Image (tube, rainbow, N blue to C red; front, side):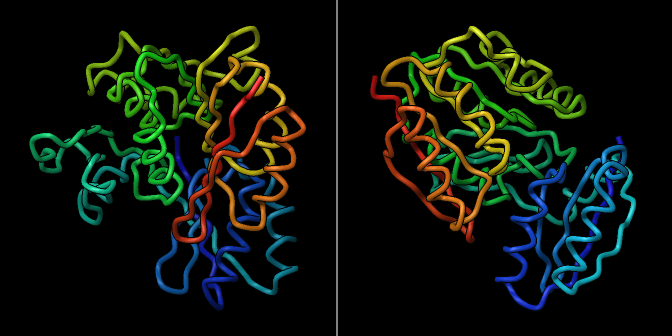
Length: 276
């Protein structure tokens, strides 16, 4: 699968965050900022369906973007040249096979770098990984919704989770998730599932991890709440500060109570719990 990089010059960090939040409503899979340039990545085959709307969005903000084709096979070399392993507070290392192994006593997850999102460098993946470390997942069954590389599922089972379902709508992500599960030797405890939230109908979980975007989270919250066991935890990310009140209110309408929030580089993580 080939990707398109939409490259947008931004005036400042605030404008970059606003545009990122707006573009997250479309099928962009990851974002990064290099100086004053915001880069948003989308599968080439999905761009045609939303390009006119994206162009109109950029025009409303008075900015112009360039669409640049990126061949998938170039990502391995790109990551090896430019990105180190990711450290989560000295407790977890998310690394590619070409990185040095984690020190003794530090948990590690190996991710084959095919796309940037889900390798730990994005703030939301870092926030969610730290949340898993602190959640207390040992012996519990979990769901990784919008699993991407599968990194959160792998972190969870390495923290003792009994089993994880890893659901993603993208066939490329599903294939990469399976590759990473095998590389980490956890195939007996993670089930990759290609599809959307309908795949979890009738299933029950002790905790759910959902690192997607605001609109999908809002649409899927009823399904998450229905799938949670009493006392179950839902941890979400993929949104910005301004989205927190809306998500907290929507979660409350589903009988989910706020446990806590966290922030990194302007991105937020939200932890809620089913109390009944």
